[in-house]
Image (cartoon, rainbow, N blue to C red; front, side, top):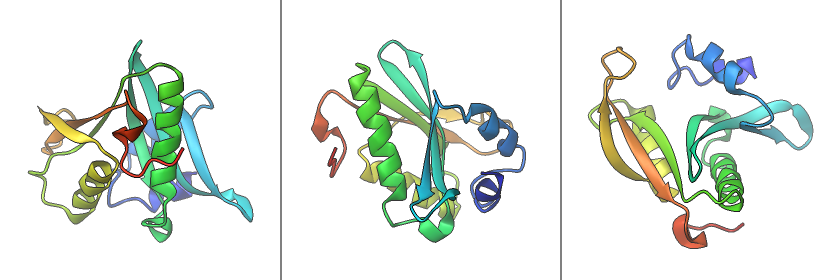
Length: 151
């Protein structure tokens, strides 16, 4: 898992590794693995339930060699299906603001938009690193909330 996070260095700062590992528990994370090599992590997603009807994706990453092949979509769709089953009405995710001019974050925002998330409000520089963040929301009331949901 650590090697996967290191391959995502365009998105994660080195100190993020400890935070990600801390949240990788069976109750909060899903891991995508290669079918022929289940020890090889292709992607991960962690979620935290914040209120009785809302959850938050706290970390997500897909190996650059596996991006644009449905791994991230499958991870988000799985989390959304579990969230709906648990009675949640909304999922949140925080990502860099569109004021942050960095191609990997443009890709991240485009991915979340394709999944049906919409920018909700600017959070500012919460990490104290000079990078602005935005909170995005996905309404889960209907199965149509995710563009192309197949679950």
